Image (cartoon, rainbow, N blue to C red; front, side):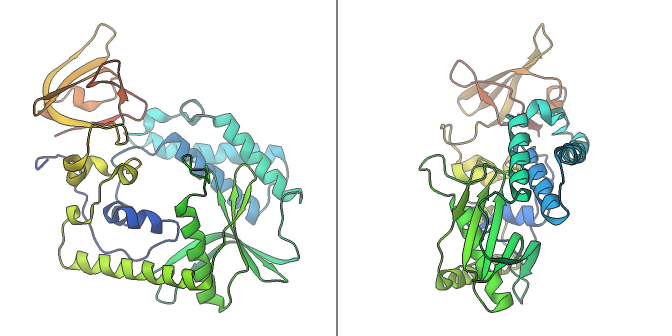
Length: 356
């Protein structure tokens, strides 16, 4: 990995931790240090995540300025989709994912769900908070030292106190046990702590709103929210202190199937390649030296990669992969699909490779 010809990841101190990123920060600091410093991703953002961002933006517009009818919704949807696709087209590793209508699974279903969610909000027939007095949208709150901060989707002031609502555009429950996802729970509890720090009173309720119009209340106590806020502060301080002492990127990496599965920086993470295993729970990625490379009759690429005593064969590679035409002796590929034989793989739409 010492000769990896990729943009240097590089690390520098992090100015703030967002409640929405805190859980991920505890899983792998390197990933969040890079994200916080806006390092260019080495893997494409999934079409599903892109659609999620579009949905969240439209919910934000609906809450702040209103969406009066379905035509307005459709117009805004296309505007936001166009913005998203324009940025993707300018990205060499994402341009093949345009148009999203073709590459994002359940595109029309997610669009319809977003419309129904927004319609229910403005038809006043959704599960609303009673005795509402005042409502704030996209409210930025931060600690006095500015080390923890984030934008809350909605705060509803009621006669009983404040209700914090956070909208999610994907699944809010864990597919394994059916429980609410831990990162969402921690995010809302941190919001509660931020609210207290700013207004010296605790919210009376924390609500997680799903795109399926489900509404989940998050139980919390002031003491646990204060502890969580202190833990986030300490994590940020400790991380920045270690960075200032000159620790390397590898020192902050904590590879695991959960941490690495959706990490957009893992191609350049040496510790990931050292620790990962060819097991189902890990991403389907390979790295090694090029032993054979060529094209089939249908002009699709085929490559044989050797790592130690193991050989890996990848076929059906489209012409979008520049490493097929270069002279680099080593290759890494991420997000492959399993073929019919062991150590045989095929391209998927998210497959990305680099020569070095």
